[in-house]
Image 1 (cartoon, helix red, strand yellow):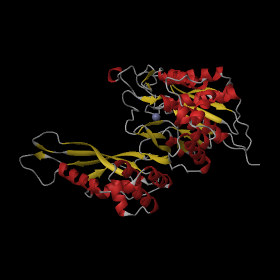
Image 2 (cartoon, rainbow, N blue to C red):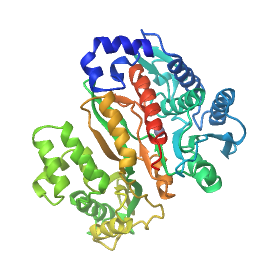
Image 3 (spheres, rainbow, N blue to C red):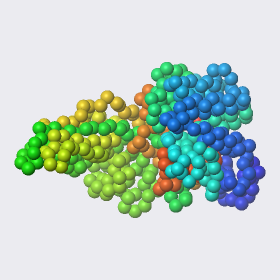
Image 4 (tube, rainbow, N blue to C red):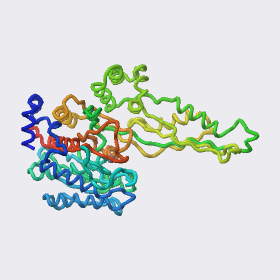
Length: 481
Ligand SMILES: [Zn+2]
């Protein structure tokens, strides 16, 4: 590391001058340059994790095997006893929990470093290569889990070993948890740990997946920090009717009644409701955007009732999903024969509810939009959301500082996910969670859950370095005396 960075400093003097730590984005390895010992370790761990099939359905027991493999690496690096444990949330669902002891000076609670071990199914015939053989090609690492979420899992383990080897004593404990069943399955590791082993994972806050950087035409564009998630709900709209012969139609028709209700859902926009995270999202993203879009983002962040700005931004499905709760028809069934009046018409309406929007209001709105006592809306769900995590300077400032050093000019953008991660149960249990990784990928070519999943080699080592520095910043500062 030292040699390559010195050479780069000579070549990039101006960049080196603006950053005392050096222009890491330029010094990150490509496949052509030799890896440092720390990078080689991270790569080896990454490869080992990719090659253990942790698909929950296809190969039960994979997460246990992966958790045991990581435990073995930590034990041979000097972690002992209760500081490295494999715990099962289900019959064959292993979770690894490891702890690097801090000095305790300052009395701060631990930081939880989280990643999930399980992956989404990948079929050999869908892929160009074997999804469970780690491959490096054209500057990318390929394999199921390379982006979701084994890069972070490997980095947490590699960095914990690196810190141990260096004799780094954080001011607080660092906990690494690699967990099962995030993608599905019945034994979600985080929920199980929170319910049964809270003392092992209790923390001031957690760092998790869900963030990371976007590349636009190959260049770093924004660095996202996930601090909130929308909540997923499905509602059924259903009309039943006594039916009859279609040669003698009645005005009372189940399909028409449902269609009219759906047409009202289509026209309805839920109100714009910004929270701390989405307000910051629009403010910061305005720095990366240009022209009218940037102006609209600034306007909405300042005044969410600016109708013209809201209307223009809402034309983008991405921005619209950040502004408000959305509900959309996703499935339809009805009728039982081409020559019979329908006895049943049913639709699924999928809602993504803002974390601080009461689902009771959403349900009430659907009942009102159904506008017809014959249209039955399914009952209020019991699942609940989680509050956005506060954008505390303690966490945000180090992320911003390191982002400036490693990717100068790239804004740090707080984001709300429209999908789900393990951040939800953590936030529900009072552990603020930040999706942050320093792992950059093409914003228009996400292959998580898809075929030929991959990670830029350069991005992997940048994320590796970023998270190493970030955790040290968060847990290595001198306490104020
Ligand atoms: Zn994931």
